[in-house]
Length: 344
Image (cartoon, rainbow, N blue to C red; front, side, top):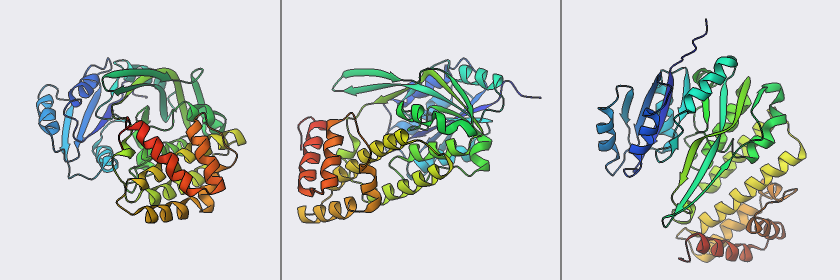
């Protein structure tokens, strides 16, 4: 007999979020659905995050607090998976919040469709910069329920509405993750959520997608890539490219969907170029790395048959096809200055 009130494990990786973690955890405690456990994994925080979590721990016996050496968000989430006892798992970033109705809504849908492996839902995006707030939501046109045989039909709408770029807007059957070994790739600290979502989507037998936005993503920094250099970012995007190719061997999509993916990855390539400009290398060394990167056939393939709503992305794509590397460096520097508020 089906359990209509299954235990849900909510995994929260934590690193240096002392200003926000209390609000995040309390948005879980406030859930109208009470059969849950909260697994907080502190990833070696250097501020007061861990101490704050210890105080919150005293207020609710559903909370588990773990601490690991700083290893990155993927390892922290994987630790949460390994310690989860719930039949379902939800990931929550430590500076975001969720609707008090989230679990109630999702479990109700699962009870109506007991074969469902994943419930995906809409998100509200809040951008906070210099105390200014911009907010919008991304959602599909209507609720959907589909099997793996129909997944290719629904992929484009879900992807273009940001349903597949985050790991946090999903209630996932724990068995799906463990049976298929769908852990986060520890080699990735860039687009790791997207790759995880592709793995889930490819392996799920059936999926429910909800129009309702139940997760609030709060973006407090304008552009993380502009302030921190990732030495292995080009290697990471090559891994992501392989994962995308493997995904589309299973989930066959049309030309318009391919164009959307190409636009998404073209933007990711531009992020790699901006990241390279943040290195301590000389101008000549940076240009050499950028040229060798963009010249690769698999990178060039993303610039074909695509169009973006962003003038920057379209111009970057045009210059990349023409292999105008110095101009690429110039527009990426300008982009970097803009997102940094005029600071170099």
